[in-house]
Image 1 (spheres, rainbow, N blue to C red):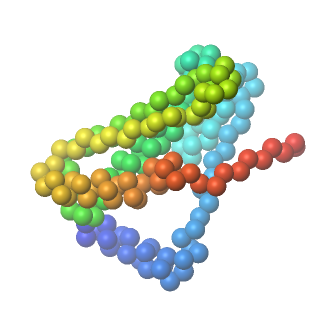
Image 2 (cartoon, rainbow, N blue to C red):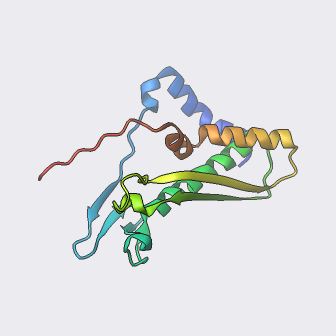
Length: 169
């Protein structure tokens, strides 16, 4: 897909959202259920069932997906799609591109070993390697716009309002 095709695809959607801003607001959903025999959660991905469990550093077998890994994978997926869309929109030809995310955790926090240790990632690093002949100013613009429009990156970066509820059924 080239920039003109992308613009043509998105133009009616953008027009709709300009004239009816509420149409742009949607609620994405995810659902999981606890596994009966393991400390695990079956997550419906829309394509398959993913079985998430404890990371080996917290006693897991390593056979299930780690939710921390899944968070980084979601970041890589979103950043990669956004990078490609932005590159297409601003005419930055990419011969190839790789996206990497890594995050630092201290499992003492999640295991309750040290109340002062944080629960969750202390730092996340997102890195892109691109093969392109574009000038550096276009590459800089590509990174800036990818950061700006990547939903997962911005969600992590700006911390949305969070609520939790537990209901007995």
